[in-house]
Length: 168
Image 1: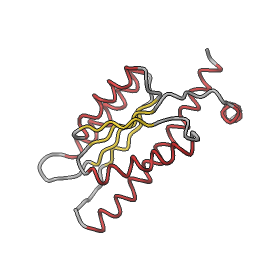
Image 2: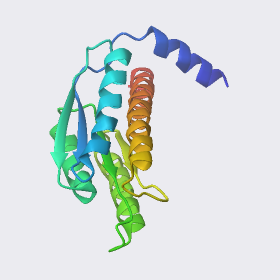
Image 3: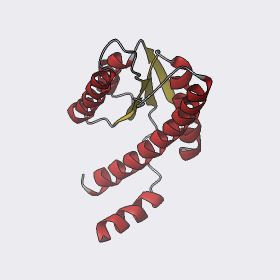
Image 4: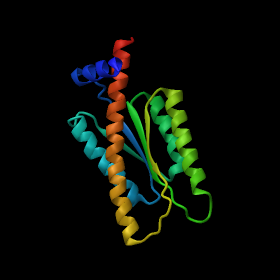
């Protein structure tokens, strides 16, 4: 309990946070929906970092390509974090849940192997049909998830900064 309180106090006083950009890797399948995650992420990032951190957007063909690109970007050292965004749906041809879990597992591996935080907005709905109602719901949902990813990113980067500062 004391450690959490101490970290909270230090985090709010810290002014030396990393200002390197954040990479946002997005799949192009269902781009209209996935783009909303980018909108939510960029808007929330601008607020949380007071526009001092930029977001570099990289488009890849599909969800399966996100982990490789995330790894390549993380290894450059130019980015303080990487975010992956995709909408993986059941198209009735292959196991969409396999794709989603493979991608998320690989993103976890990237962050563990590189030490660069990686965040996921790779989402798989239980049901999706290309109807106006479903599209409206997922457009709004992805924007919310993008903003949530920005908040998670900021929180983890602040905590990492505290841990590094107190444990050189």
